[in-house]
Amino acid sequence: MARLEVGTGTGWRQLPRAEYNYFLAEDGGGCGGAIRVTDIHGERLTVQGIAIRPDVAQPTRVQFARR
Image (tube, rainbow, N blue to C red):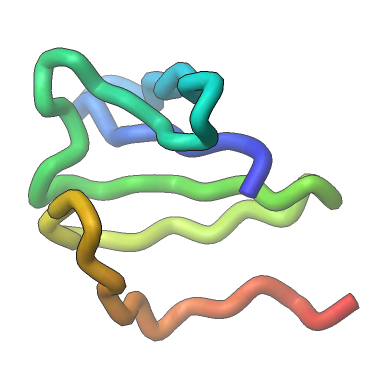
């Protein structure tokens, strides 16, 4: 994943990537709201209402195209 954004109600806010490859929202933004992920090829997927929890694999029902 190249980019992670959280819905703000008025648009999207990109989260910074930490040097250890995690995306961080210091204010907790994104928890329970819409998130948008972009892969290295520019494909974007939007996921609605997912609770972001550390160290938990969560199904989304969306999939990037196979390359």
